[in-house]
Length: 315
Image (cartoon, rainbow, N blue to C red; front, top):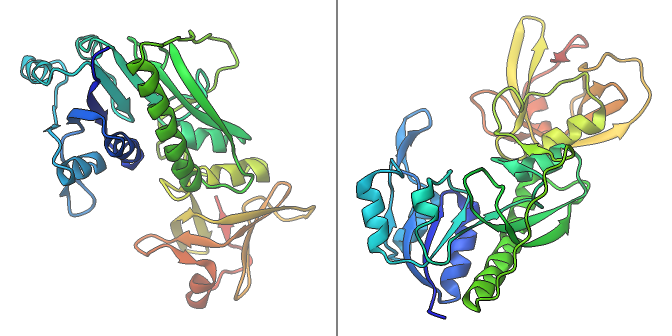
């Protein structure tokens, strides 16, 4: 079987970890495809993807197409003469792209497919209180995350684990899965398993402002899971209201303690050193948070400069 010539497609930090593993294991990377540069943040400074920065650092051939169906891009892609595409956290590919290489196009997805197809699988596994997750490699087809599976690797999710920590662990696990998949393909020994659709499949919806907002009518564990499933990014948020003051606040590190009480759900109870928020079945102790226009800080720092009345509420 001929030597693998790989085009890698990806955008965020998660993809960089996988790309680096392929590079460090001396595979022939003939091209890297990532998102175009775009303005970001308040100053609208031009932002480049983590994958672009890595590719430039390693002097890899880089393409940043705005249109994956354009004749110009398809011609340039063909000229790379790759026989395999590897995709990690990129966008949906047109058939002309994923069918181009001789050995096809495989994707690494950060879930145990068919569970958590979609944009934010690591977040939603924690938000939904799962105790295990993993990574899956599969051949891309014409739908999102539905192709024939090559292999998967499983891991447990710690009861206090944040999405940031799980992200990093899955990046390492994903690197192992991609190396194994490359080895299987290079030996011509690929056996795939079709995904089965059932009503029990959960979706990893794209995160937005609405589904990151805390609903204080939910149970303490549900709110706790939402917060750790969005910590550090994009962060769960809520409004704090105290008299005439109202703030849009992001919550990061919290501890949930189950307890019977008579406080209203969302009521803020603060001393000079501690801030807790009543939930239906206990309290959330807030350890770190971020007020608008401020950096993320430990709760003790915040309480040095602000006092909450007994009428303060999160909503």
